[in-house]
Amino acid sequence: MRGITKSFFGVQVLRDVDLDIRPGEVHAVLGENGAGKSTLMKILAGAYQPDAGTIVLDGQEVRFSHPSEAQNAGVSIIYQEFTLLPERTVAQNIYLGREPHRGPFVDTAAMERATAELLKSLNVEAGIRPNKIVRTLSVAQQQTVEIAKALSFRSKVLVMDEPTAALSPHGCSGTAAWRSSTLTRSNSAVTSILRSSMLRPAPPVDQRRGRVIAPANLLIHNQERPG
Image 1: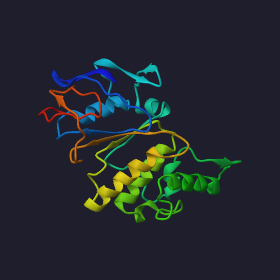
Image 2 (image 1 turned 120 degrees about the vertical axis):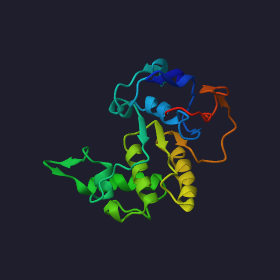
Image 3 (image 1 turned 180 degrees about the vertical axis):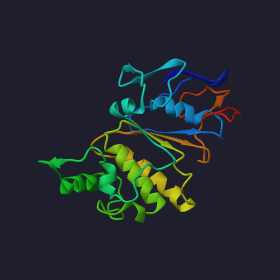
């Protein structure tokens, strides 16, 4: 991301923000509410369009007009509010609208096998069964299902929006394990970007007045701005 700038109703939220990411990295976008973190991530995921600046993915400049375009290009975002259907199984949620078929019928066995492989890549296959009803899962387990769903799109960039907000302190520690596991998957290298107001310790970076000073992991400086 280069020179990303965004304003709402005349209020500048982001100004000339740069962010470099590479396969296998974990980046943290940190700052208090109103700092502009969410706006930057929504631009990356296609929910907002920047007023200025460019996004380059795999060497090609891209411009997403809708989140589905970003997802098809390999950029997935997991929002703080889960989008799972509580009365469906884990496998049905992960492959909703993309169910494998055998003839005119959904191939449930194939769908559950694929789900089991995704959960195995996250090292949680023992605690979450593909045929388990989502409403019976804990909040942390439901978040894991959201991560597995994002990875099922063969994501290259995985954005997690406030991943610790809905979790207990114990659950927060588990989030770090999930982040690490996505980066060690044998079949792909995934870059994780975590947006949070409460992660700590913060990475050794600096950003002042919405501009990146050190273009490593990104920290959004606290500002009283809508974001």
